[in-house]
Length: 227
Image (cartoon, rainbow, N blue to C red; front, side, top):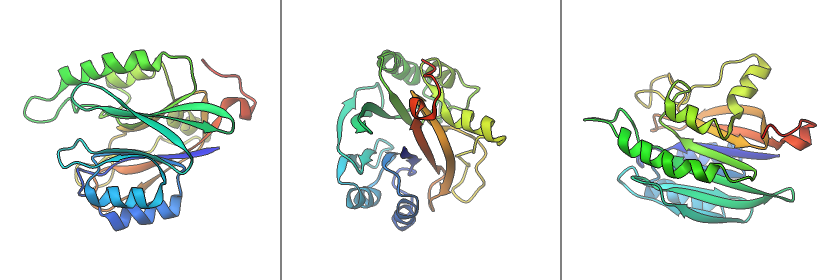
């Protein structure tokens, strides 16, 4: 089993103490973070010996870190690049992708063209035949075309878990940090895995909830791989 977490840290405005408390409580094995500022970068590098942390103050900061050895490279997407990590999980090679898709409704005109170009580069990567986990702020609920394009290649393991337990997939974003979460735009998608548990955690100062997912390889559950 591997526990993963993805979180958008609101361009460095998330409280580093709150982030540290959530990481210490949840203890994820792999963390994908978007909009990472310098304070959050220090928290991540202090707790995770492996991976890449690249803080910035223009909504471009990112991180992909792990408790176990991981080889991380850049995924050169238009507008905002992603990160790709390769690590071993119980003897199986797994690719972990951290992405932050362009916001299609960002003022003043949105970034739909940039988003389409990102997907055009990302989709061929997802067609490669290997176990894969994609995490990040996709700026897309399940009704958006971007989500539907990605789930052609990967399973929405959070939605599948929710259906199995008779729950609603947790929402992850609110319009203000102190507001309730109203949209599900942060996702964990995977190929060759199923979710055993899903939770969210509030991090003070961020308008996104941290999404935490426990994953196990499909073969370990006795299920046949879906792809």
